[in-house]
Image 1 (spheres, rainbow over the protein chains, first blue to last red):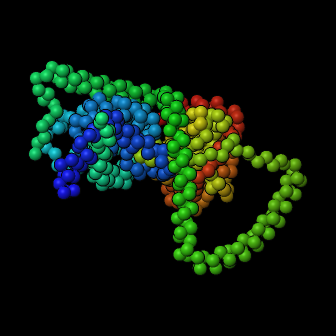
Image 2 (tube, each protein chain N blue to C red):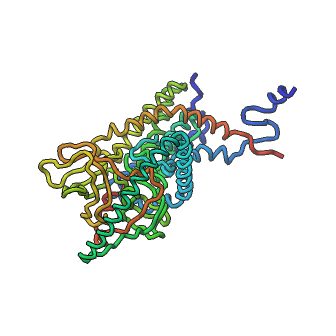
Length: 183
Length: 295
């Protein structure tokens, strides 16, 4: 009996009767999680070389690939501006590259509309490599050891991307939970 | 399976227009980003005010994290201590004996030093730091090496001031907000510090390589006198850093100098001291330089 009840009244987003989504959380969560990713330079990790993946960008990419159509195409400007405040890159770096990424992924999706784990990891790998190398050239083109400097960060970012995909999937389920009681 | 795409927006005029507006906005955003990037590459100091305000707003959260880091390091150290307590105890006792002897020797040297200084009529003016503050975080995913400091203009911090830890020079203040500031670390590719070898008069420039090491470039070219293990300190040239602060130790010799490891590991220090600029006249020069260096 309890099993029967739970299967009709509840789904993965909570009880279906008398409950509704919170529009505030549904709207804000993707943006807030990307901004939190951009704030990682304020974490108490003081490294002497670029090592951490660019968290803000990877969160943006994960939301875009896991949940296409949720972020508007123009999201690169406001989110990139916040990222530029803290990342240490010259201002405009993230605004430009994030906007271009979203536009490019939109065009890509129009041509190859399929989804799948391997395909999306491949797409993410290509985009991450282009982003990190381009940012490296914008900020430190004069460094003679630029390429060897970027390798650990590249490897870490590519390997960690599926983890961020799962994180975004969890956040997305949380986003649509029915928090609000009606009546 | 191909999902239904959001691009073909049916016959609804409203949906078609909002899709079109989205693309126009995104294109405009990318162009604005390119323009801002061009401005900040040609005039690096252009947006420092904006950045300072942003880091002021977010710094309190970072400071909490920095406190947690210090706490957790202590926890791990005490856990590890249980495993090695026996052998370490014996080693420490022996070390303590030796340290006592050295202390006595040092006392004697200090007394002699004071006597000789009095003889020469020199004055001991120890530099009093402007403020002690925490390093909150660093730009750990960018090739530029900046750190955030938990003190700003209201604590008397000004651009150009040297930042040092007990183990040596960390960098210098680049931008100041009201309660936080941004530090250019020694290893940043734009950081250039005049140094000299502790023994002898070898003068060089220490240039950041963004990977935790510095490149030492000799001022006087000729036979390279640097050997592996040589320690370098600030030379005082330029007037920003007072002479004698430890900077780096040479690890690999090359043709016109050496590759050196930075002595102060910013990751291992929680508190740093911000010193006043050594020669106040250097401040004007540093401001001019600042404009070139900023991101």
